Length: 212
Image (cartoon, rainbow, N blue to C red; front, side, top):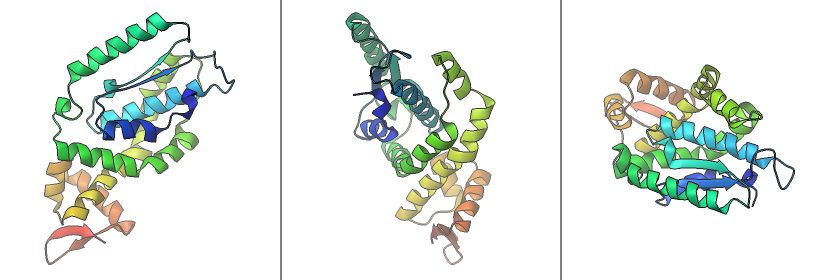
């Protein structure tokens, strides 16, 4: 299967089902078997996924993409063995990052709910085409990408988590701040945005935020 068919949802499903690491192997760049250069699209998606992982407090080294030819069996075995060793050293997903089970489930579920939106953003605003891996890596570590990420994705991830929390019970700004690891001012900003979208409202009687 061409790596161009790898979707963000595939990788996220693996992590949500308990995988501690995900490895993606593809053809070498500029050596596409299907003349679609889907491996470039896969690289773009993987780097975006790693960016989101880091934002959520998950180690992005748990996801790896490597390019090699079908005749490089020894290289494949070497790369996979090294990745397995690396993942074992990182420990179980969440636990290795100091995130409890409920916190991990919340982050992954919030991410899952945004997959259709993130898929659209990736294809329309974040998809770039370079000729080398180094150029892709430079773009994904650039200030431009950081700005786009904050503008298009970071806030959506926070709001998604807030909505999931409020489905369980009403919460104050301070309580959500403690759970999500965001400052009260950040939570207030996201709550204001959520209220404008008709997602949440403030319950005066309980002095808590609830779903609208």
